[in-house]
Length: 358
Ligand code: MG
Image (cartoon, rainbow, N blue to C red):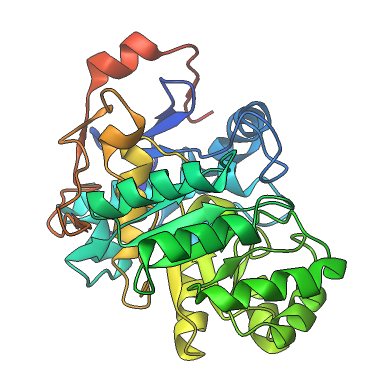
């Protein structure tokens, strides 16, 4: 078979939501990042499972593609929504292509950075004092960006306490996860006093025009996360001035083709991007690290080491962070650059589905 044209022979996802794609006796893994509940985006594990099984996988399995870049289009026509389900398949195809070519996902995507700075996300705390303690500990561990989740009533005084405790040089930002309304503009402007790298997603995901109005009132750059679900929304953001930074999560935008397009649009506009996290296992982490090695990923990504979230990850080697807060990029692969511990995956499998050409 022409090595550039390979038929995707099958897809199976043995653990609850990780995907393994097969071709020519070779396989590679990807991960669907949907949460259990629709509190970040409309997708859930249950809806993604349905979309993967009924619509996404059948569009790819048994088909021949010239390049993994063509998979995005195959998953787009007359198939709305479900970007995380689509991304699980699409990103798996990029990784499988790399593995079949004997190269790395990093190189196939065009990654250039050999190590990527790592940031961390800190949840809502009950008191400013507790947040200060957590922030100080994470800064001491080497993280190069501290993202504090904020919400009404848990914002200005909390950020002020951390800034005062950690000093002017601490790399601080906040993420509101759309918890505010345009009426909170004056209140949010008080955060300008703390020299934050960015305020992420203060308003609702559909509020691009209102984000633009808010950005005009803020000195601090707005970063958009939930709002940017496609390259077209990134173009809208740039045209409207609705933000000055983008958090790219490949699952949120439907995979690598869309992520690369957003990356390129932002780079041309002088807008930096960074890679957010969805509490991935080491498989999803591999995909994110590869993406974050592209040249316009200029800010630390949420790429914490395996040990932060897992007693034991499902990949070998596990992901680690250097003392100065960087993750090494597996430039040479092969594929995603780590191997999956099948015994461990099998031990944790709760359901399994195999899709083969009909
Ligand atoms: Mg966010």
